[in-house]
View 1: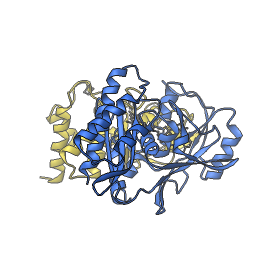
View 2 (view 1 turned 180 degrees about the vertical axis):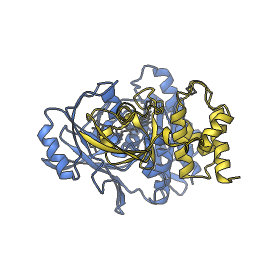
View 3 (view 1 turned 90 degrees about the horizontal axis):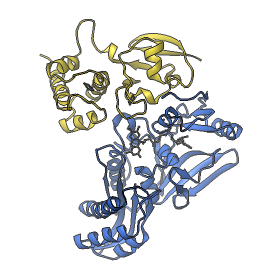
View 4 (view 1 turned 90 degrees about the vertical axis):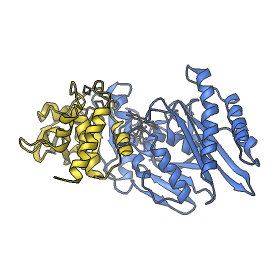
Length: 156
Length: 284
Ligand SMILES: Cc1cc2nc3c(=O)[nH]c(=O)nc-3n(C[C@H](O)[C@H](O)[C@H](O)COP(=O)(O)OP(=O)(O)OC[C@H]3O[C@@H](n4cnc5c(N)ncnc54)[C@H](O)[C@@H]3O)c2cc1C
Ligand code: FES
Ligand code: FES
């Protein structure tokens, strides 16, 4: 079946089987491999992307369900060579080691900060608890997102 | 871990759903709501439906309607839909509080109340809500519409009174009296994980005594249920730490954990029952 996805602003017409998940189609058919697959059953959050303004687990949505929708993945975060403030903060705070979980955390955090720029530390901790990271111990991720929230609120 | 092939449908009306269910129920047909339980089971190939009906394009099912006597929760009301609700004050507050215990944000943005009831995980918070409060499930098929009382609904682990060709269009919760107090407590190893034990309680206070006590327990047995013995113990008593501890002890004597770690679960039962009661008492 033919579906159309608007991916980071570009329209992609792809042929999918109903059983293909959105992650598989974004990676294999559209060629955007920044979105990772960890568990493929909803537990780890590595596949987190933003579909029509909502952060979701892309391994739990069939691509066919996203026909006609607007999707944002990690590839759409930086503007040319300028990193997104969240990406800058991840570098600054050493919020990644192997980097496998990073695209998922960045999309999760992007959604949280866009939805509520004044999100509290406690709420951020709750949101970020959605995803798993086997390397960092989470503290640096939390610190990076808090820092990005503060810079994005008061642009210098 | 990829799902097996299936035929996909995205109907836009309830009538189309029930017609498809009638046509394909023999070949294996499933409804796809939030997909937060079904898609993992399909990835594991524990479920291999030949036909899948995606209900997400049906308009009007995403509302919680206050009919006065009861609240009606449509088949596409997401867990998150309870976060900032405009429901009657105390009931709205407890449902929002409970919703926050279900999984994580991205899952709450997709998963539905009705899907949780159809799935009937023993540890589901919404199943505990339906079992404890007065709830009715509205099931529609080509054979007609029927109403199932929550007391008759649960049959076993992930097993319910819903037939293969039935679509759960909504769940109705009878509106409790406005002065009803609610308390909830669940224990899970990490915030967002499935509960190892959870309890929901509601009662009114008349002249300082507990009346119309409802006490439900989830996560421990095959499905959540009210504990009649504990309710009778509490009925007419004045709330106190001592009474709550006795209620927890009595609850522990009347449960049959289906999990392997029986002794541990029984200890948890005491704790969650006692703390749910304390929680209700703190909201006075
Ligand atoms: C990591 C993770 C953690 C989770 N933690 C929790 C938790 O702590 N507590 C909890 O309760 N849940 C938890 N869940 C499950 C989640 O809440 C699901 O959203 C819920 O169990 C099912 O709702 P759904 O809308 O996603 O249903 P789906 O996954 O779409 O469907 C589930 C089942 O119900 C059937 N179905 C769905 N809607 C209907 C309907 N209207 N009529 C008839 N049949 C229907 C489907 O055919 C399928 O068999 C978790 C899930 C994940 C991935
Ligand atoms: S790959 Fe989607 S949640 Fe793990
Ligand atoms: S940086 Fe390795 S999993 Fe998070």
